[in-house]
Amino acid sequence: MEFFLRKAGHPNLQVRTVPDGTVAEFPIANVSREDGGSYTCDYRSIADQSRTSHPSDPVEIIVGEPSYTKPSISLSPSRGVSLGGNVSVWCRGQRQDVRFVLNKEGRHFPPVDSDDIEVVFPISNMRREDGGSYSCSYHSRSEPFAVSYPSDPVELVLRAPAPGSAPARAE
Image 1: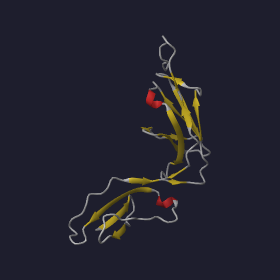
Image 2: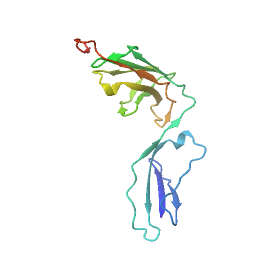
Image 3: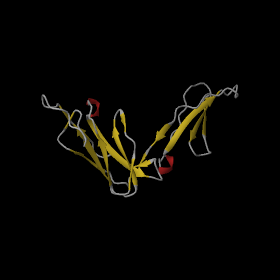
Image 4: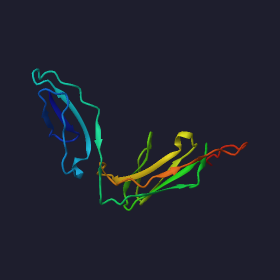
């Protein structure tokens, strides 16, 4: 088999020939900012080069950018939120004009552009699955694959509502 590694937006591809195997490895030594990006791979038979695979699902390589100071993260309110309530997740970096990303396993939040050094991610109508550990990171708008290291995590604690009380609502 002949395997091909393709990086989106780059004409050069890497090729590995594996005569009697089904796995090819494409090591990246001395990773730099330029190595970040979206990659796919595909393969074809060496004997019958007209038989090629479909491209793989893409995988993104994100490169931690040491010059981007790790952001801080905080919650308001900070002592827990009732089911149905609202919380604001504040993420603060050291650079202006960046795109912030809120991270939580199993949940996707749209990135937010900020002209300032901080941004707020509002979460309303809290559900059980909203509880857990959150972190944030940021990157330059022009270099989306060079990202700050994530903030230290913050734990969003859900409190049970007081008996007979209605859940908090946004005004």
